[in-house]
Image (tube, rainbow, N blue to C red; front, side, top):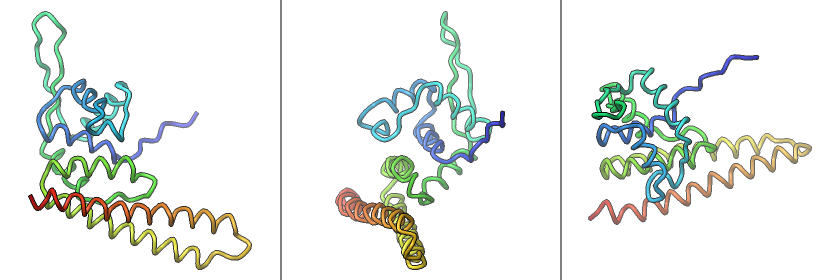
Length: 185
């Protein structure tokens, strides 16, 4: 049996966004993720998964827990963002998504929290992501140019990926037009 490989923290940084708003209990974060009007539209976590991710964030020094007494009920842990957690969340929020396959969950989480931050964060995030997507498309076009005639399947896969990224670019246009109204008011 091979040991479990711990992947670097990525989407988990979105959980720090809740703590950037205010300290919370883990269950409160879980409830917010269950709400259909918030981040729950794009990201669903089982409670056990959430607790594991929060443990990784605490282990990385991004948050701390303070035990709160609750009278006759068992004490609860209040989660607090650390200074390094606030910095990590800020870096995550400003960094474009690195892979098209992560776009739906990770970028939408970033956009959710960017809107709560300020207009500059939203505009910067959209511009940085647009640049990253344009670079992806250019690289994919370069790969298709070097795909030989007998690699039909490879060429089709590349065309599919180009279509996905081009659709994301059109959607980013929609974001800019929609959010420009909100930013200007």
